[in-house]
Image 1 (cartoon, chains in turn red, purple):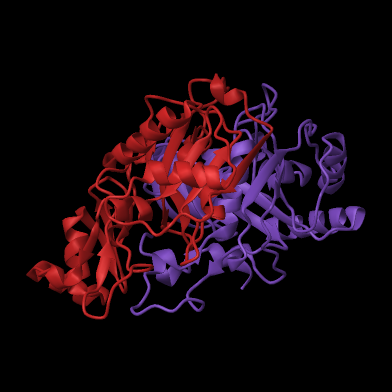
Image 2 (spheres, each protein chain N blue to C red):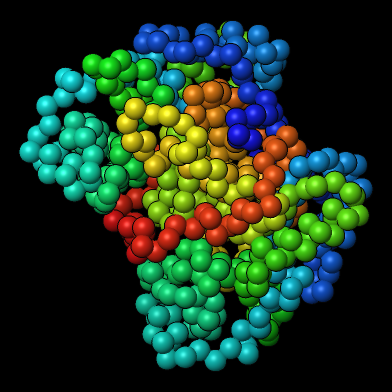
Length: 261
Length: 261
């Protein structure tokens, strides 16, 4: 089993000097140039980890709030959440369902399946001018974005790599955010040990499945920044868990097994 | 601010060959020997990450189920959870409150404050003989254990290090476990950027506090194993976030801010 041949070490490297991303930018090309500039040589099964923010910017997911007309429902929820009704309107448009509303936060099931605050809509680090405030939505399809970038870079550099797209997401019972996997291509996402170990008694679920891609995302986020001086792309070396079949969807708990909605 | 001087890279190294831990073992001494054997030289501000399981074993937290007499409450919950009533009895003893009961899982607020499944009680990787099955409770006081180990190793090696004790814990809305911080000494646990950045509008909470120690734990768990061939101790190099005042308690969401109990 691939998981058993664990590496003795891993390393994570920042790609410094990634420029401010504009709509239409080729992220694969920008990363390739960035690696060259940082003297980072990609090897087989390295993982490129990318903050969702630059994917979103390249996909023109910046929305001018001045163009949003909130519905009555959005206005009602905005009052309860003490938020801008136009932002709430976008949260509703980006979500399948609302799970909780509280002061400053609307927790939703995002259309991509993730449960997260404010549909991942980000008001920070956005260059809004005084008259036209903009917010950034999550990428349209992070798995497709990851695959596109992977194809571009694999072709350029001729090694098999993995690509992971991450976001910093909060948790139900713990403070602070951690990096989570939003999209991937070519990497294991969930490692299920349940069929690979013999136990006298039923194993506890908590120790038998590993959210591998979320751990990669959290590790990468240690090197990425959260404020303006952020590093949106890092390379993980030393971890060998390629997969052509795993999906980020494997990490999302099915609704019928969810105890907290 | 220390957080702004982010490193360009980090590395995580396994300490191989840690022996099976027995009650009374000096974990600090065992790690010191392990580092020597693996030619790992500790440097200032390196972080030693230790799986809770070996701390618990050294603290004799192995409990024989044959000695446990479940209460009526435990028997009732065990029926609902489809679990061994003696294990449920221990879960109750280790917890402040029960949050959810479902098939195979009792989600509790542990006496240490963490919300987790089955009070972190682990039936896997325990050497039980046929007639006396044993389970392993979480360490008595992981912060104290971390501090003790830190003091021992700092004294031996004469560098200032951090120590982190981790467990693999599940999440409300995502499948699979990730490494979480259970105890620490000498490291930053939560990095709060809210007072350090200027924003035109209120910042979303989700992007302003970073669960630093949980990210360290998740990163370390990539190198640790989950099954029998596990690596219970790893060293993180390259991350410089010492703190003498932070506590793992900073990572626990206060009950009055909790939307999911």
